[in-house]
Image (cartoon, rainbow, N blue to C red; front, side, top):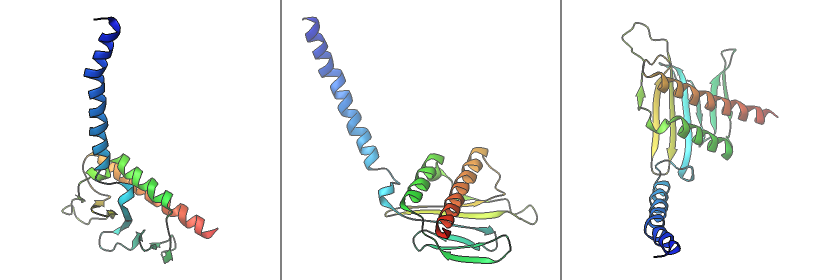
Length: 167
């Protein structure tokens, strides 16, 4: 066998099947991804003291209410753009939101619990992910940081949308 025919034989028996398998395998993984933005329906967040979650936002209805610095309740209709929602979807995926435990609650046996509760929900056509997180949660530091980062990103997106609305 010549040197050229050995290279062709090697490519046909090893490289081509490997590449075909990679395209098939990863194509199926991407196609069957559990949380795709193309299936995205809406996102909502509620937060406040454990007994009253007065601060709320729902991207489906656009209803947004929060308590401002003067302790008065502000209600408005606020829509996040598709780019904002795509950014939040990707941020949630980057932070591993789909792998968060469903309940991350603070220990209520330690006297008066003054933690802030956050309920974050991403809804898709076939699935949804809802996480209840207390700011006094004691657990893995990386998980706590990921929750705080996601909450910060959502709040920044809402603030930016509110600023766009005012202009």
